[in-house]
Image (cartoon, rainbow, N blue to C red; front, side, top):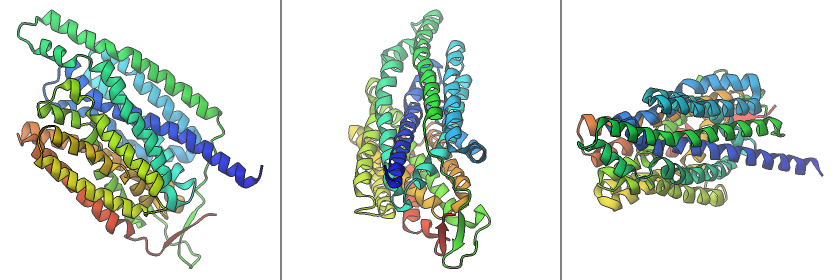
Length: 435
């Protein structure tokens, strides 16, 4: 076997392992869409705003732990960082057991935050890894493959988790809220609902631990980017000495912030959006699957079209325009039609992460790990936006469709700016050379 074929085989193995990781990311992340209505019911929360702290706990971890994750990766390397991240993910899953036993919403949020911390480490390792394991201009294609893995998990998790956690939720909620239900009966119903947590989260903890062992024993190739220099093109002299000399990175991180905000609104919030339209919870619990099916279609297009038929930048522009159009249509429409347009935002969102991330870290050289961490910090947008929406809807008493519209539309407008001009800021004379 030639050295080139060995390299290709090694890359394929790495892509398969990282693809499995992205499946795990999707499964854990999109479980939030089920946990929001489940914990609102099981912990007897009064408003959607309280329940949206599920997404806050999950996504805010990225903001606080992405940079520490970058430091850990520099010390441990990509492979060991992935192993540690998986073990922490298993630990976060186990926290759900005492949370269910004590019926503590705060403890549930702690477990979700620990899972978010693990995902922060895993995302900080996996995204630059898959971006730089091949040519940067085709990074969006590889990221689209990862997106297929991620969103396939997202499609099935509401079906699996919804069937487990939200079975007969509408009738149970009606019984709990009924004036005829005694305190003892209400406590018994809540206990039965919380009992549904034990088996799936113990199983997840075991799966994550076993996969950590598999990754540790695998021949996952290490990629050393710390020796890369960033130079002025043609000068041969190092031009950049600080991460703050890359404005396109910080514009990209904010683009990730608003993109994830829009993605979470379309994916995790669509269930409560449907309920607000008068659609039964037994039906609306599956709406996240519709959103993620749209994303899956978009990723297939990305795998086929990028970079053969269109550039990363062009794909991002098209997706931003679609996001604007579908947001306006969801606001104007009503009933199931409005829900369909919210679900179609999944199609609009599909190629955004695969395009934004490579554009944000392009040309960073030895700053790639730190830059990746800054990009991952932008995932905190998913923590903030549902709370803004909940505040507008539940506290300001703005109609939920108008609240959704004014929350989401600015996100797509900024993404369109980044696709058209923002990714070019400060990059004109930057080129990356590998030592």
